[in-house]
Image (cartoon, rainbow, N blue to C red; front, side):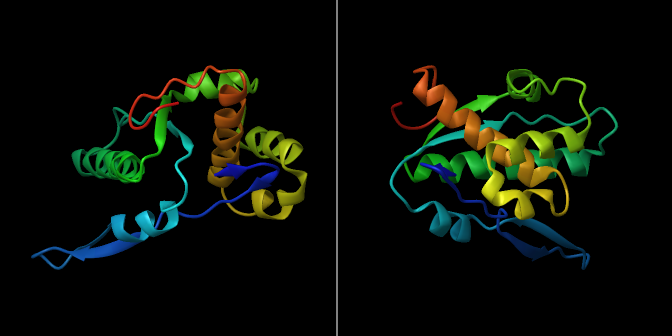
Length: 152
């Protein structure tokens, strides 16, 4: 979420589900996600997801479950959702063919006050920050076209 000059990030809450065979799987906790998203409706940009050819059927199914859970909860709370492909958003930041560290550097250049948070760990938070920035840029340019949910 981007609100003015501030950037609010959170990990998607997960919960454990135990199957009959004893295996434990992590799935999106829709209730906790709803608590996080229970704010004034906003514009949300979500990266379109699709499994890779090398993914197992379980991995592909889990990815789809998480993806559609996120869309469903955002929509249920009245947020306008625009889906973008990785190629679309990376092109707008000059990151096509770039390494993950480049995403971190770009996000830090946009959000220097959050450098510590963006530099730590994996690239996921940096890419989420770039998607938040994209949502604001599209809104300012009046190019935000919701794919799901409310009115832009």
